[in-house]
Image (cartoon, rainbow, N blue to C red; front, side):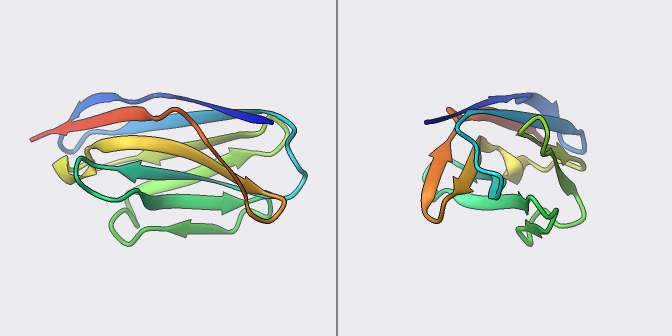
Length: 116
């Protein structure tokens, strides 16, 4: 089993920055993908950014140039640095880990609110 624990959400004014962190524990395979998704009220959950062990990254178009995802393979952690935040970035952000093919795990979510 895998547990994901997020931290770092909060309230920030437009233009501000936040850093989200996620720590994975349990049975972690050597090859996996970690990432961040978000879900705003009334909308579907969407990918924000993801990173593989080989540090290949993927970003949603809406956050390119404003967000940076990074990970520490030794500690099984993944961080999301978010800059120049906009009100439309307001959502619950979920940490995600995929390993062993289709085995997908989610954190409990952390609220990010950007005030205008």
